[in-house]
Image (cartoon, rainbow, N blue to C red; front, side, top):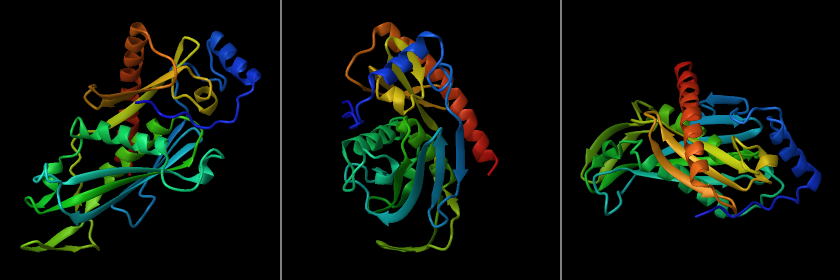
Length: 277
């Protein structure tokens, strides 16, 4: 399934030619190489009352993620597992193309890409979130807020999600009597059981050129884009294509090779940020 294109204002033909002419010269319109990310910053603990939180910027794209936990019931088909829910909201002030109201298709699809990238490799040990088997479990809400949109929302959201989840802590369970679970909300003792980190690398195709971390100008003229989820073991855990045109088999292989290379750098950067907290 592809994302519905954002309602970008019409890109002037001159601007599109500038993007393509820069690529023909071996550089991008903002001066980066094809394999270069914009500057990345990670701030941890930005929401003091959240179980875990992080603010991540890739260039001028800014995403805030907050993790909330509460006691609830498991899914009927997963009675021995806790619940992970991923939601995304594109705040209207982030872009003139965003409108107030419920999350649109693009926000919903962003949340689904993040959710699948966590769920497929079992990045969180959901079985360890069980309190009363079949009746009471921890429910983990991962809420994504796009605060400033300058391209490449998914990579930024995934980094912020991992940083927030890996710093999240669960309150202490005071007592369990039948289906009644008493917790001490003032505590943050047990780390969320995250066993695996995942990042996403977006590879854009523009006029036959492949490049990572497309900014908003590049996204507005791209032919297609692959969002590739890669875990810390170097395994591909998810892939999503958007855009109106296609990738050749050779281009898919090149995109995967590029994503694996850049994913290693993103994992290193994330680990360094977490080690320095």
